[in-house]
Length: 129
Image (cartoon, rainbow, N blue to C red; front, side, top):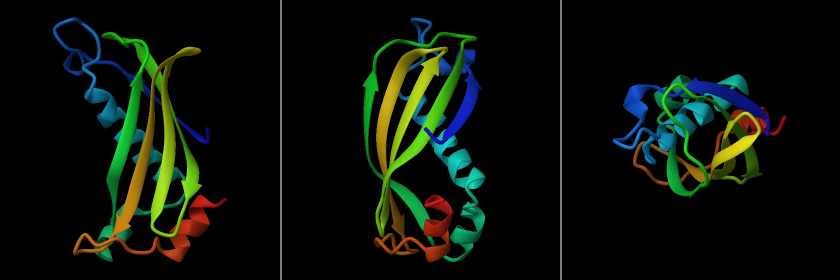
């Protein structure tokens, strides 16, 4: 995996059972993908000014073990496939060496009309490094 983001689990992340509510992992994965892109030189603000966005086309999540209040988790993010209009990511949330949750996410590049468009060449260059 190319990028790692550490997150602390707060009370608002948890459900009545005291474990991370399943949908909240999606927020953590979104933050990790955003940081991955930024750390690889992709300026999301500049793309938005040009009328270009990355949107989630699909996500497959596998929950193995729960994280709990005050746990520190590490989210690793890497690209498994880079196509002309989409990016496939593999992400894993771990507590220490223990795999908690994994996700495969596909982002599609879209224009201001939400039509699929080619990923800008400068973005592809940043992500192929």
